[in-house]
Image: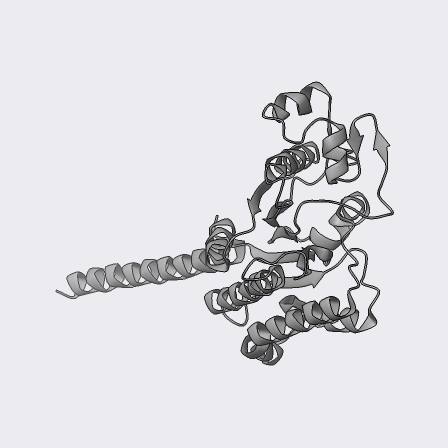
Length: 300
């Protein structure tokens, strides 16, 4: 009887140890799985050209209002990511910036507040971010558009030179636990006085007069003309395999709506030449529709 009791006791002890090991193993797997889930590194390059001038573009909502709604949604999404990961694990990043910096120092001051890096904050600081991020990003974005419209300083955005010189430093984290996402708010016409170079039929800019001179405007066969004449943006790099790009608010001139398709072709070829990991390019739309596209992109 004693022998049977001893055997039973040993068997129970072994079973208990195995169960404990399994629980610890399962717990470790869950922790490791959580660690492997990518953190968000979201950068928004904002074009403050006359695309937000309400005297030129009279659509409702205005382009400025659409931009503000988009920026607020990214703040909302990062807040939701904090809920999902928890205060300790949340290390997401979100920044709104311009290239080059606007000439109005007040705008630069406002923009400096649109830069969140949770990896550099303790739990108490993260709570402050969580409580205020949506309102702060919405308010600062509105003040930026109001100032730009009031002063009529359409600084624009040198998107070409940004990709040539700064995109990796600004938007690609060296930490492999981050998912790098660049959002570009632009109507698609790329112009800056510093980027007007041209080699053959390839250029550093996209302007209406360029599309006309290359025979791409009002041309039903623009794709074949584009390829045949080796058109496109000049590419200076091919190292963006760790960057995802979402282009929003493509919006061509009212009398030349087909420009949208040509602009998309330019950007698609350019991103492909630069070996961008993944990209989507969308026309301007109602904020609710754009929000769905953003959600789909981020939840990919």
